[in-house]
Structures are given as structure tokens and as C-alpha cells.
Length: 192
Length: 120
Image 1 (cartoon, rainbow over the protein chains, first blue to last red):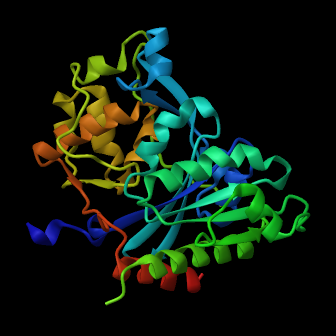
Image 2: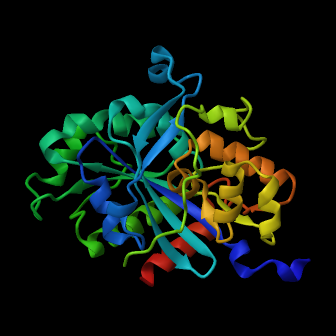
Image 3: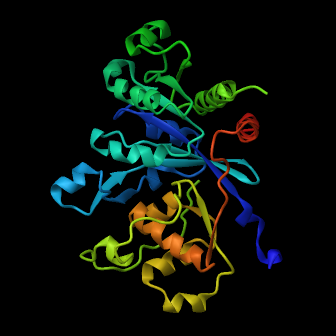
């Protein structure tokens, strides 16, 4: 029997969450690095209403439809890394727990033109406390308009959380942000 | 690169409520993350005959390993329904739920991911 199990069936997957407020560039960020086309696969995903999904419950609906982006990177022969973008709309907060559960780490993407929109996103990961995360300023015009120190102050971000900048359209920037995220997650592990 | 997955939404009148498919069940025995990979065990087209269309669609789609998220988007079914169908198929040995890479962030796994990213 064991002989009939192909190598593919031994494949493992891991997940990183790309979070952020509506319109901060999550889809662009994931698309810059993904092996699968995001624009084409940005499917409408129907999500069954859960008992704690007050949106659906209030309207007596059994399902609600959410656009969710995800991309994929082959890390090595046996491991595929999935990047899941969170739905930006506030009314889909209930989906975040589902997406975040089991994530290796998360990036909170922010837009300096609307930092306030990122407060609840950062608060979400601070409150969870179980997912290492970094904050990345998306350079919409390719350059930094505010000093990172100013951004950190405006976000009231703990010094322990790495804050960097990246152009979400740029594959190299996105890769570097992901590497920095994983290094941060490694640093948080207890040394032995 | 454009690549389609060959997933086809089963024909189903839109008035059928998704949880009709699962006979009202909402929870699988264990949580299956959106990134969890599923693959069909020894695909046999004859087995499709006795299956509900949605179950058959999952069984066929997973001839290549697919994530729960890919199944939900590809088959246009709610995540919860996909989880129940996968749980049913796994219970009778028709699909295999791949092991989770790690329950908690794990040094070995993180280093493996970092190595992979460095090689891109």
C-alpha cells in the first residue's frame, strides 16, 4: 500500500497571513511573489454563516460571500508556503480567526495616508499574541513619505515589533519583507 | 503564467442550501486550516457513481493535492461545507489529510521557509 502513495501526498503546507485595512495593497503584495495568478484566482468565496457571525445571523442568511486572495510559493520540494490576504472590509472580521489559525506569522500592511485604518488590524494581532507579526509600510509611489519613526509613533507600535517599508509591487521588496518576518519569528522562539 | 486547476463547480440549483449537502452538520472532527492539503487516495472513477456531486467534485479535484481554500474557491462551496465533505471522505479512506507542517511556529520549519525564500 505504501508504494501507491506518491511523493505529492507527502507534501506539506504552511501559511502566512497578509493583513491590512481595505485598499492597503494586500492583493498587490501577494501577487508580486505568488506562483499562481492572483487577479485570476481572486475568487468569490462563499463562507457559511457561523453562529457567532452576527452579520449573517441578523439577516437570516446561511452564507455570505467574501473575496479572499491567496498566493503560493514553493519553498522546496515538499513544502509550499501559502500567503492569505485578509478580507479588508470590516464586516468580515469573523473570517480572520479562521485565516489566522495556525499561521506561521503575519504581515500587517499599512498605508501612511490612512494609518488610523490600521489600528484595529495591529490591535487584532497584539490581542491574539500567538502569531509573530511585523508591520510593513506600502510605498505606493515607490518612496517613503514619512519617516518610519513617525509612522511608529502614529501607530503606537511597540519597539519590539519590526517596522519596515516595501513597494508591494516589487518582488524583491516583498521577498525581503517575508524574510524579515521569518527572521523575526525565529527571534521570538525561546533559544535552546 | 496562467494555470487553471480544472476544478468545476458541481451543477446544483442555487436554491439548495449548502448545508443540505452536509445534512446539517457543520463541524469536522478536527479543524482543517484553509492551507491544509488534501489528496485523493488511489483515485477510482467508479467510486464517483455513488457520491453526491459535491463529494465527487472534492474526490476528483484532490487527485492533485489541494488546499481547503483552493477547494472552496474552485468548487464555489463554503469553507465549512468543504471541511465536512473532506472529513467524510477521509473517514472512509478516500482522501488523505496531509499532516500539518507544525501546530506551533517551530524552529526547524521556520528555518526551512527562510532557506526557501533565500533561494528564490
